[in-house]
Length: 333
Image 1 (cartoon, rainbow, N blue to C red):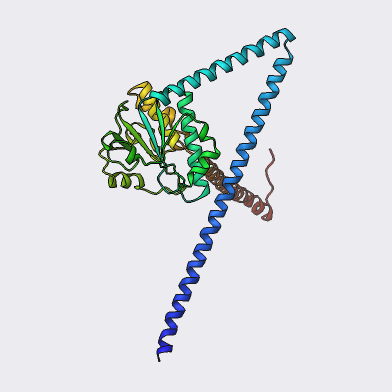
Image 2: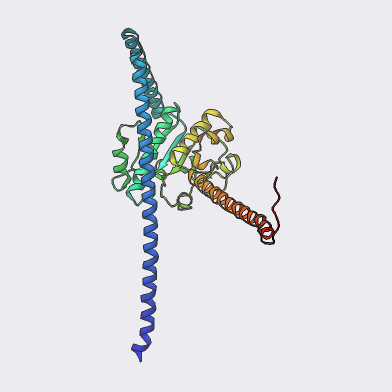
């Protein structure tokens, strides 16, 4: 009796496990398709970039070959001097920001990024943040915190060239390094908007780059450590309609640097700094869907028009046949 009672339950568990495995298999296949498409698009962008660079090099070569030898030598020497001057200016700006730049902007690397791609993405965004500060000649002083041997993002940061940057790298956490009263924690989950950027404060950006956005991570960590000031970028109030509040690290750094430089022009700053996919404009995928829908609707309309034409032509031909069958003579024009 006990065995007979246990058998249905065992069958139910087995069916549930099978259903779960099927659902898991579907999820894995979906992720694989997404990854394949992502890789395909990445290769396409790489090829377009390579072709663009090739065209640019060919155009430059033609331009140089059209010059006289003396003119070409003078032109190349001038360009070389401009590059040297630009690099010297960039280095001086970076050194000033490193030594005494304000405000301080911290990329908090204490969050657990589980996959290799997430480590690489964090390192890439940190590099782009550093490049944004360099290109803008901004006085923002960048810090990376919680970058210790146990942090698996360290290898990705070193591989991308972090050791050669003029940037402050700390093994300690942001909560150990700075007075909590100076910290402004930037989180899309905060309830209050950031109004301005002050040089005497420290702005903290969460180093979170997971593909599926996990809400409240930076907010909860800040609350656990007694943070007093939590702010979100004023995207809802001043940004383009439909703009997404979750941004890359480098985009946030650029927005802070521009707010410091340009003053209280939030609409203009956000319009210039937000990437296209976050600007509220239709993405490439949305545009493809719109075109497909338009083609489908056009096909339906064309099909309906053809059917109505066929029906009208059939109805128009019927009286003639009746007339002929009845012995009448068709009229001539």
